[in-house]
Image (cartoon, protein in one colour):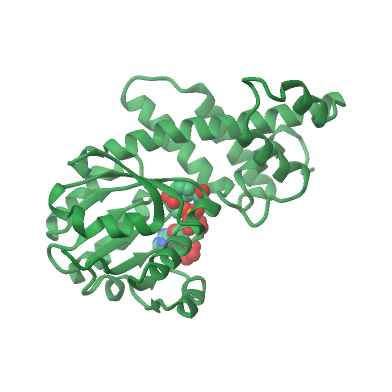
Length: 295
Ligand code: NAP
């Protein structure tokens, strides 16, 4: 393909999907957007998207289908409805963090309908998504890369190719490793701040102590600020989504015989924070899992 503009069917316009759709529009692509809750997709019309009622309408005639849904099960359900309407030979970029069990099933569905499957989870949260600065981890056939490259370029600053077989989930494997780090750092931030509060230690004293040394990190300050300055809503990455990812990480470890205690404990902390009413807040709100009462 020499023309670099694509017709992209975007399925799922949540925190990440809406931002990615906007960047596709900015880059000159045609976007047909579908979301289960149509109201959430509607604002994209002002950016030039065609907002449609069904997933099938979004993918009909699309060169590229982009799924950015909650989890693998959701992506499978939505694409079971949509795929029969898609053009054989179209590319499917599957960016939902779906987990190791789901990716081969999604790839099999793509094969059933003659779609070129790209396992393409992304690294980066709401702000990089809005800025078109995500890192796309991609695995899929060489044959369709010309079709998908302009889409990756519009949503991301960098594409890291991990293989040619999307079904092998090489990108999802790398994504799960990266997310295990993100989740551990989030959990550690919440626990350090909770302990500081319990012990009557000024968090600034802790920040000053590690300032400039190898234990200091930007991520600690970003997540701590959300907790300390009341910036947990709207979320960049919701507690419930983080719980889903922590459980995918634990399951991936079980599959390869690796025990992951921190990810398992993090999943429980996210679940406890959600049970206390923080499920829709940023995952930094796992902090509240340290206290008996909603604080
Ligand atoms: P989100 O804002 O909660 O969006 C979730 C999307 O899934 C919404 O479009 C939602 O539709 C849809 N959905 C949920 N259940 C559904 C169902 N049963 N049927 C149809 N649609 C359904 O989440 P997000 O943060 O954008 O995350 C989307 C994906 O990206 C997740 O897999 C997440 O792990 C991954 N991710 C997130 C981040 C991040 O920082 N946020 C970063 C990298 C990757 P409704 O609007 O109707 O609920």
